[in-house]
Length: 217
Ligand code: AP5
Ligand code: MG
Image (cartoon, rainbow, N blue to C red; front, side, top):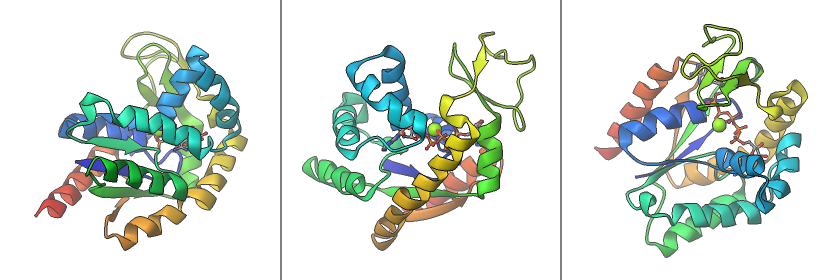
């Protein structure tokens, strides 16, 4: 199964993708995670994308398409995969379709998370990530037991650099201008389904599994 998760920054794409990936036994591929890892390692690619990410701007389509072509060719993608944060523009959506077509595959479903800008701002303003094991916490919805310390591995928690208020606002603006238009593309193909994103993660997972089940009937 090939699934795409669409939604504004902070809509819970990463959180749901982790749950869904273990339920469906397919890899979770997040362009944001791939690019952050490259930036952390200081690779040639990482240096190129860091500035775009820090400003809340999209990395150029050509770079993203090359990265994804490489990633979805890997053997663990044979039985399907879950895309989080890609595609994000019309050229990326068309590029993905071309890639899949050349392997006689296609997207099964696109899940869009709906939630208010207020909810996005609160969630991202409160997000904390463990620098050791990568676990997610949130000051408002899932606070760590000890201040800035991971409950799971005891490492330090940090804020993502692009979760500063002004960068969140920029990311939301970019999302509305460049990513919302691709919804219509998938809607016309009958592949778009919407899920309410302001519930707790387990309820969202349940709703999404129902959507997947009804699609397979
Ligand atoms: P990316 O990493 O994809 O960031 P994003 O889309 O802005 O989304 P986030 O990762 O911030 O949020 P999310 O929806 O995953 O929510 P999460 O589960 O973390 O991209 C970063 C940057 O990389 C881009 O700005 C761009 O520069 C570049 N980039 C990436 N892909 C690109 C592409 N295709 N093209 C060009 N550039 C690209 O949840 C957020 C918080 O809310 C957490 O604290 C979580 O614990 C909490 N939370 C989640 N779900 C719930 C819930 N149901 N209830 C309560 N709290 C919840
Ligand atoms: Mg994410």
